[in-house]
Amino acid sequence: MNDIEACLAGIAKLNERILDQPVAERRKHIRDRSVSVAVPDLSAVFDMRLTVDGLVGITHRSADTSAPRAQVRITVSSGDLVELAEDRLDAAGALLTRRLRVDASVGDLMRMRRML
Image (cartoon, rainbow, N blue to C red):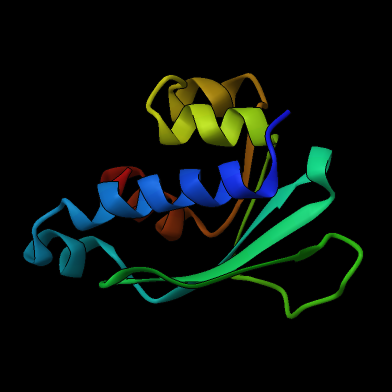
């Protein structure tokens, strides 16, 4: 199990991966979306927006604190979040084995797949 800081560092790495893409590619594949990442083993949720400028407005809260429903909802353990961020865990494999759960529209899933 990792802590909040390790998860925030992982999210920052994912953001770097997004920002490494050319702006034209980001504009082509990214639509402004609210995102929440629930980390059950820490009883925490990370809220943010996915924009052409990357992940912005990243905050965290306790899982029992209510918030507006995000357009893209991700559930992952703290360890798997860090492994995904460090590219040690394949996102497709994590989805198939249910280590990663994503609740989003099909269009959002396809666009996110291209960017990560």
